[in-house]
View 1 (cartoon, helix red, strand yellow):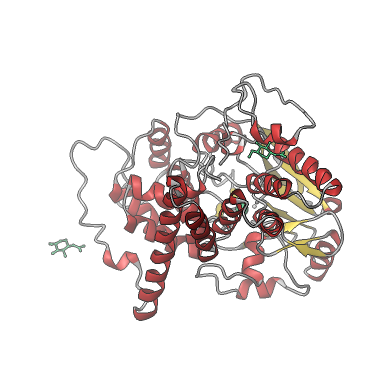
View 2: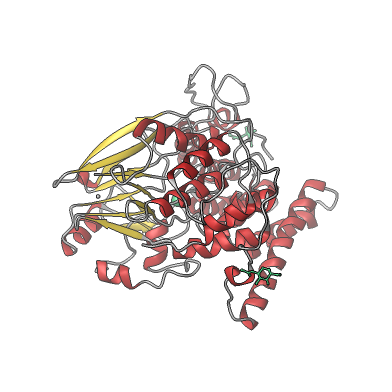
Length: 478
Ligand SMILES: *[C@@H]1O[C@H](CO)[C@@H](O)[C@H](O)[C@H]1NC(C)=O
Ligand SMILES: *[C@@H]1O[C@H](CO)[C@@H](O)[C@H](O)[C@H]1NC(C)=O
Ligand SMILES: [Mn+2]
C-alpha cells in the first residue's frame, strides 16, 4: 500500500516529470499532490500501456490515479485488467476492493479482501481491512432486514425536542422562541468558527423544522470546508432577501467541518426560505455519508439518531431548480436517455435513497463530456453526456443553459458545450490537496448572463479532511 503524503505546498510549485510513478509517489513536503499530477500520471501510464499492454503494474498504478481523481468506474476496470493479467498481484485486489467500496458495492469488495487474507494469512493490515468491510456488509444486511418488517417511522416522532434542557453553563447561540433569526445566524457562525459545538437541542431544532421549497449567486460543492464557506459570505455578502443564494449539493463529506456547513446552510434556509436554495448532491445520501465522513462526524459530535434525522431531511432536498424558465441547475447533469421534460423531473418521487439508474440517479451523478453522444461514466454510475445531448434537452424544454457542479475544476468553474453547460465548484484546494480555485456565479437581470468569481482556499484548524471517514477510504489506505 502506498502512503501518499498530502501536504500543502508552501511554495505553490508544481513539478512536471515524465516518470508517472514519481507523480503518484511524491513525498517531499515541498510538493503538493495536485489533481494535475494524477491527470499527468494517468496520461503517462496510458502511453506506457500503448507500448506494453500486458503490464499489470501499469494498470494497477493507473487505477490508483483514477481512484484519486474519483473516476471509480475506470479504476475498477483497470484493477480488473491488472488481475486478469496477473491473478497473484495482491495490490490489484486492494485496488479493486477500494473501487468497489467507493461505488458502494461492499459484497464485491469483501470477496477481494477475502482473497488477500487467504493468500497472506499473516498480513495484519489485510485482516483489518477484511474485518472492517465484513462489518459493513453485515450492518447493511441487518438494516435491510429491519427495514422490511417495520413501517418507516420518522426520527422526529421519537424525539422530544421541547423537553430537552439547555444547561445553565451553555453560553452559545439559542433559537428565539424556536425561530432562526439573523442574530442567531451571526452568533452561530462565530461560534462554529471558534470550533465550538451548538447545543444539541438547537441542532435538532434547526434540522426538524419544515423545509419549504432571483439576482442570485450559485455555489457548487462545499464538502465540509466550513472556513471556505465563511470566506464566500465574506467576499459575496451574507445571504439576505436582497442577496439570494443557491447551493448546488455536496455540502457534506470529505471536509471535517461538514456539520458546521450543513447547520449553517439549513439555518439560512429557515431564515430566508424564499431566497436561499439548497439542492441535493450525490453526497446527501446514506451510502456516501457512511464512507466519506459525514455519518462518522455526526456520530462523533452528536448521536447516531441525529444522523438519522439528517438522512431523512436530505431525502427531501430538491433535485433541480429552474431559474426564470431559462436556466436549469442540478448537481450532476443530464440524462441517460433523451426526451426527459421538466414535468418528468417534477414528478420524480425524490423522498428516498437514489436508485442505481434512471433520471434521479442521473441528476445527481452524470458528467458532461466533450464529444457528442453518451459514454460509460468514468465514475461507474450514470453516464457522460455530450454537447448534442445538452442541445436537444435545452431545445425541448425551451431553456438557455444548465449549471451543474460535482467535478473539481482547476479554475473553480468551466464553460463547456458552447456555453450551454457550466460547471461550478466551490471547495478550493479540495481535500487540502488538489490546488484548485473555488468559484461562484452571479446570474443577473433579464438575460441571466453568468458572471464568474474565483477565490482561493483560506486556512482552517488542524483537522484533516476525511478525519471521520471509514478507515478503508482514508487517504493512504488505498
Ligand atoms: C507503481 O507504483 C508504485 C507505488 O505504488 C511504485 O513504487 C512503482 O514504481 C510504480 N511502478 C511503475 C512501473 O510505475
Ligand atoms: C415534557 O415532559 C413532561 C413530563 O415528562 C410531559 O408531561 C410533557 O407532555 C412533555 N412535553 C412535551 C412537549 O412533550
Ligand atoms: Mn458530487
